[in-house]
Image (cartoon, rainbow, N blue to C red):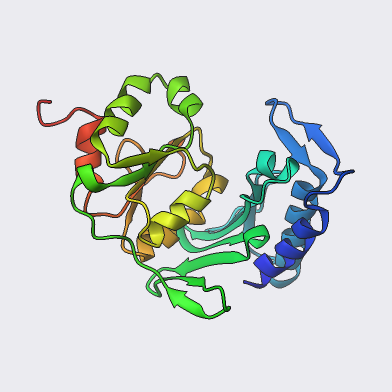
Length: 253
């Protein structure tokens, strides 16, 4: 939580600034001065207080090689950040032997934060600042489910547009909310499925324990628990297999 506090202070200091520096990375995605400064702020604390732990960050790569590894996305939703849209977050996770044990998702521009640790439940802060335990919904019928598919482009890039169409016709409501926020809404019981492609470990490591500790399931699109499968598939748990059956045309459909 202290890491998230430090990150919030740095990121908010430059949010919606007219003179924000924006560069283009080798993969044609954007990075701002705030992405870099926020990751540096987190790493500075870890270097002092957890010098023996490894760190994986989106902007500065991997340092160290131990079973305990901090996984950081300093600003998830950089394109929103650079356009002054307040839907972005800092994602901080601690993994042990590759399994996420702790996750924090902090969205300071919205005044919200979510966190979880294995065996300790998933939590958020209310509008008054009080801590509140969260849980996924008990919706057990796909026809009553609300889902977030992130973006049409993602599904098109992996040749799954017909699959996305099948999904949207089967559920009650579909929206492309994007980035970390819909996963948090799922953990709060407001959505039943969030699916995404071309995600890296730093995009999802902090999210997985929050969804799981809220009672949901978090896997890759193939149903595995891998964080390196370049996809994410989060549900309220009760509908997980039904959604996988639908999207993979199982059971002879």
